Image 1 (spheres, rainbow, N blue to C red):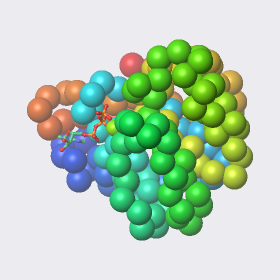
Image 2: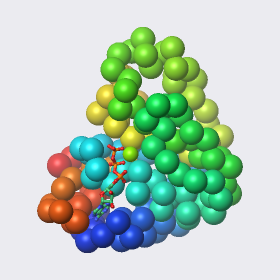
Image 3: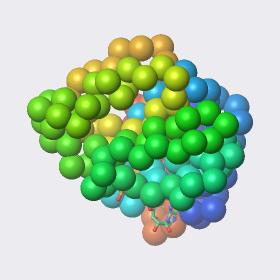
Length: 141
Ligand SMILES: Nc1ncnc2c1ncn2[C@@H]1O[C@H](COP(=O)(O)OP(=O)(O)OP(=O)(O)O)[C@@H](O)[C@H]1O
Ligand SMILES: [Mg+2]
């Protein structure tokens, strides 16, 4: 499934539609894509779809954010996680095994392990031009 988004609002809306169709609390969503391709924006839309009231921001420094929504959402940013030791020390092994939450992971390129599970959904974001982004679900670029 491929979408072409022409604005930040459109990306957020694609996230909202994914929340209402494809996603449920059992899933682990891996988001791939360069700086500024819209990973956080898409996640903001997903969270909106689950009626989250909290502010959704990239947890670049805190690594993990949790939001209480219709289902609990765990938002992880692996930008600064560069080794399996970092991953382990941050408690991420336990966090990604938490089956009661929907898990959304930015910078999945940095995952030090492969998560082999039918619960995984992969989303690839890329630049088309200044305000256009291609968003591919469950496909390699
Ligand atoms: N079509 C679009 N979809 C999403 N964002 C867009 C689009 N066009 C322009 N933008 C801009 O691109 C930026 C996307 O930022 P966002 O934080 O969502 O990216 P990110 O992939 O999470 O970045 P990072 O790797 O730093 O976490 C915003 O400044 C937004 O206004
Ligand atoms: Mg981000």
